[in-house]
Length: 405
Image (cartoon, rainbow, N blue to C red; front, side, top):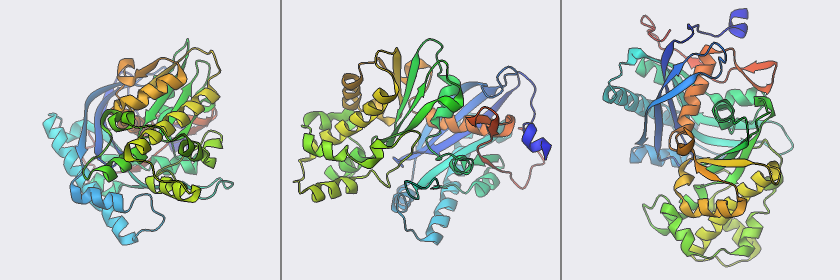
């Protein structure tokens, strides 16, 4: 047993480079984000290998698969058989897409050490606010994915995080602390996906000391409204609709009064709570008329900006030198970014300007966690003397040619 707890599962010589694949699908559910990364081992900082992003792509879901994902996402009740079949279909699509991309990138499957697959979150929620338990489910049949690709697959990162005492989300802080810490200033890593999350990385803080959490709505509600405005419209491009509207200040005040926003960090949430139906219920309960589409979009953008900004102001002391580094689909919502700049008055950067990738940061994150699961003794996520490996490992039946190991 000491082998598993005190040593990396697999050994590699210092300076050796390996290839890993990171795959994830966010709450937008528009497709698979896939990256090919090269990791160079560091004898000084084993949990901080040099990572080079070699390739990155987003593969749109087929319409039928996407409809199934949306049908079974963020609902408390679902048909169990359909959910299980959905996982198999998602694994089959992932395997086919991955092998096609490797061929396109002129990479033989034997050259790849591992696949780190986050899968598609179908549900993530606290059982109750006072109770510490969290329930989460990511659709990803990692055993089937391993069989279909012939590669080792690391998966179920969120479930493992919960088992160790966390909330399962966000996991971005693990990557943010390793690669975006600055010795001279505070950095706020803001990811605006369907849900927005922040990591506040201060120079003197170790991993277990950093402040992080989901701030609340990001793009998801605005995306839902966009599809209501026009069939086939996936999002408010550039925030143009929101910019043309007027914020309903009364509605904004009521939406921002949700108890979630008063909870301390760390915390997590999802579209189970923050969705367009929630907004409509708030309108009905308050006896308010529904604003025009453009005014409602403006109000939703203001809600995202306000709740993000409130969290940052609460945890970054006034006058402290800080940069805001933004990733995720929200970087393209220019109206939302401008609102944040007005609210915060800190320099706001696209993560592309700081050596990261706005489009592929989360897929890189899971590739990194896959590496740490296999090649380190774990990360000190909650305490300096408690190392935790995130992820479960699935191996293919035929490992007669374990090129990675």
